[in-house]
Length: 320
Image (cartoon, rainbow, N blue to C red; front, side, top):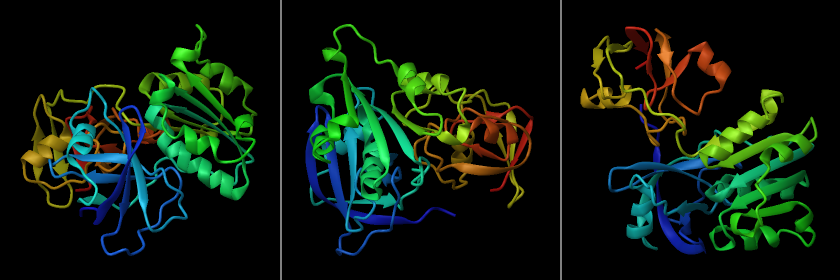
């Protein structure tokens, strides 16, 4: 069963930084939008046929709008370029209801937030929430240059003494220093919750630096895959609900094989980072290639991201 989608009107498009625009989305009839929590995202269903996930930047108390920010990436697979070049104020777009794979732990005594580039988007929503709750937070925000760092004005306007909580690190203003993520993690109190969202090298460095910390205190949001999808093929997918058997040939993912066979399946990012295509495994051994499931969840083999993961067994039985 497909996830429900909603219609949203683009009320306003705002320049936020070099190659980054924010998009304010409202209900066409002015009604309240489905609720969300800090760190959540929506999937935009573009008229080009693409589905792309974007974090919500706005305050979760604002039920009249969603705000997303889109970086026009030079390596775009078509989503960000389409939004920048084709979508205009007044257009109506379709989207999923909000989902949250990067939830904020509101009761934490201290939150350490690390953002790289466009990774500031879910982090800003978290900061808005922590400010409202009066919780202790600290942000380390890295970007290529000041003109490429989105939402600096909003961050600086949060409170008069925000500079004590906000550390902006710009590549072209470092004078040879490196962004020392390991040192940031090393200084964090043992009880703090740590969050990181940014480019893949930053996230890999963050995961390496936090290996010694309890997994329930470490939170990561990937926007892009860090390994290639499983397209080796050579196995079958058995659909438990219908009994159909779908061969997965070399060069195709499970999702592509299902779609070619006319089997509908939820999907969005196509890279194993958003969780939309998560499917229950009834039998067989998956070859996990996603960044959504934790290491423990992958080892349990109870679910699989069919957009990027394959099979180590000759047959994989899925709850489809």
